Image (cartoon, rainbow, N blue to C red; front, side, top):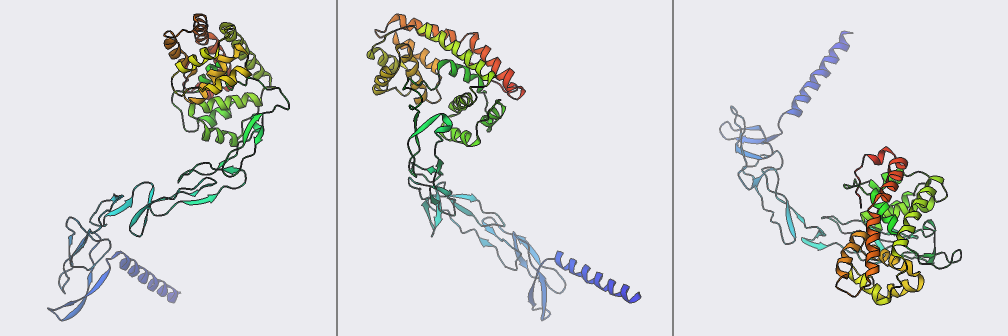
Length: 402
């Protein structure tokens, strides 16, 4: 038992000595000319140098590195190293010189260091996406788009994008996509005859705008999708909407897709009925203007932003009934001007139409439509969907009225 205790004490003693040794500064050998003995002196810590070596009676004396000099490690040097690094063209100072570190330079955004030069990151050509983005130290890594994905741009940042799922949108594939282009969707004419095809009506737009809060959280679209009842919009479609549409348009596309997927549910049927009533009222206000091509072209030219072209106007006149033509063209204008509010754009246009020979009756009809969409119909729809159906999660979010 005593023998065991003795061994234990010896081990403890070794452990204590080892700990003390670990905590003490590293040593370096130094010949003391005064005593003709070789001593083990303490090194100086980072940020300092040896001002005077130790002697048999005094320890090492350290001094801090002067300005523009540094020492990265414990050392026995008589002086610190000079901050010699100078940032070259297309570089910026990532870390300024300190007493413990040399100056650090880094290539500007979009470039990487290769043999002392900051080279531009490689741009992946169409058909290839970014598998690994470039960094200040490495180039972009490109990878050919796999089956079902495409890239139609030359970019050093864009990854391959998944082909649009036409069937999920209620369409069919007119032209199958490949590595450099997306699927081209078209209305399924095998099932329904060709029609005007208004993407989002004025009533839907006015209604949908209630679902966009003033200040968006990063995951707003996912919150809205999760809150909607019935069949959920898939994560895949949500991500596709985020990639291809602006913030305002994302909500439109999400609600449109949700409405399409749930059109047979009773609660959605009621909302569709209310929107239909709103649209019927809009059509009554617009009436039967029988506008000419010149009239429609003048109306579209009066709107701000990107213009609806003459070819679109001609196609609209062929496919749409006279009562639908203005609605279709306003819909095309909204699509071209992603973030624009159609009603506000129309209000802007009507001010300028007064200087043209434009039918006064049509101007008055359009003014009535604007007033109608500002009235209580949209608020009633907003209450029904956002307060009764979506629930408390959306009630807590501030909404923006048309």
